Length: 212
Image 1 (cartoon, helix red, strand yellow):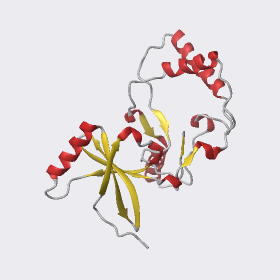
Image 2 (cartoon, rainbow, N blue to C red):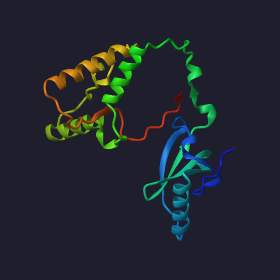
Image 3 (tube, rainbow, N blue to C red):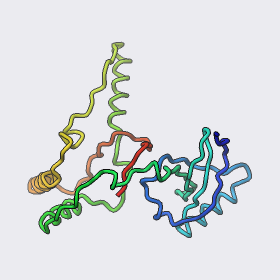
């Protein structure tokens, strides 16, 4: 039996925002107040911000009911549609072997790389959707030339950051540190890093996720 769609969100509890693991996030919506609803909207936003909590509720759309959370976002409110528990994979589902021992030297190497590439906060402006840029460039090229564009160049394994299914993390760390050391020796300064590569700029919603 299908659930009737509704613009209303039934809120039934409030929880600390940090207790909602991001692995449950599916889609994000920005909420606007209904007609004559400016005051309740502002009141909920400010109260959630002050208490550092989010509202947990239910919302029905397209014949299905969803669990959602509502949280303050800048000057407004955002709603995150969540996966249900049985839709989320856990690390146990991966069948990992017992964790191997990590030496002090290996841990120091990893921490050094983290320290060198750390920022004060995540900045989404540093990331671009380069695949979309190539598609748009190909479309413009087609418009100018009038020729058919049969395919879009895909990223090479090196551009994607790996060459196969098995990755030697320690080798990557050592090469990264060696590369940084070489640039520093050649007089490289702390200039702004170029934008990093991503596959999509939209808040993608995968059907299955793994959490730690």
